[in-house]
Image (cartoon, rainbow, N blue to C red):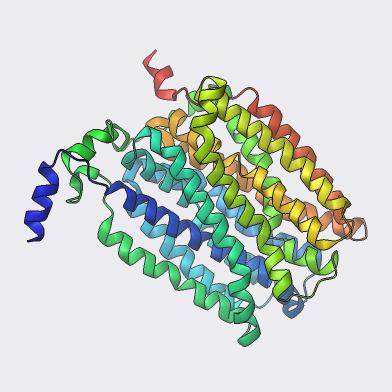
Length: 434
């Protein structure tokens, strides 16, 4: 019966919708990645107390994940281009799930840094390989929207994590939270391994009409042994993509590293339910920003004339507004309005996400995994720097939190300038053909 159903799907003139399962797997994995990341930030005050860490020591521990994530992004993206995203994603998720669980057994700063480093190394390549899967499985006009939905889910996964972690810590302890969350990824791997195929034509749920709708996706699948690094290095767009992602990631990393500590030390809030809700606001509104931008970009393109201009407009506006709203947040005395302003800054930050990742798919072409990996690498270099800079500023200025926001705002303005000169639609393959 199943064979007969597959045969009917294959011969139907109506496109099947198997490709939407790829979006589903990307969404669920994005949620899991952010649950695992934000768990550390929410447990941070408890870890600092139990391990006796100073702000600067905790800053180094928080940055260990980002440095490893950055260093292994390009290898992870390259492997997806070469071997296909299926095998690479399975390896990635199993690896990071193990090291999420291992966090429960850390006993000092060094052990925490080592586990976080290997956690970051394992998770590196996740989003580049999901981007590669979108490049293979989705028509071009659906890719940016899918990116918006995926990043909405990722941010919301992180937004609700404080509410998940808090009762576990209160009922058990912070170590139990890492053991529980480490098991979720293994469940995802089982179902992904059973369903996903690198080649849409190899999947029994995909008919000829859907294959035709994908518009030559097979050309994006073929492995390659050498990345055109010369063209990457010679492309101003690639350099500017790297720069803008560094800029938006620098400010954003505060939300998944220092924010719970900020609420406790600067806003004098107990680590209870209200604090957990406020800590989740930036990621919650960031997710909305991703989704909104993904949905309205086609309409903005009709208004301003081209997708090229639309991506520039939305990303530049996002960078400028994010920096301005962080400064507003630092000037408000009441913690609730201050966190609403910070949530609005995160919303604006994430208006940049669909244009940036959409540019990687269009500019990268069959090298989309490698290009998006290199862009995300630059973002995580910023993520490696930011917690250390915050820890240094706090240690040398007697807890001057406002200074950390001024620095982030200045970095956002550099990102805005970068977007004014990015060509986010012209493929490197196009340059090769000419």
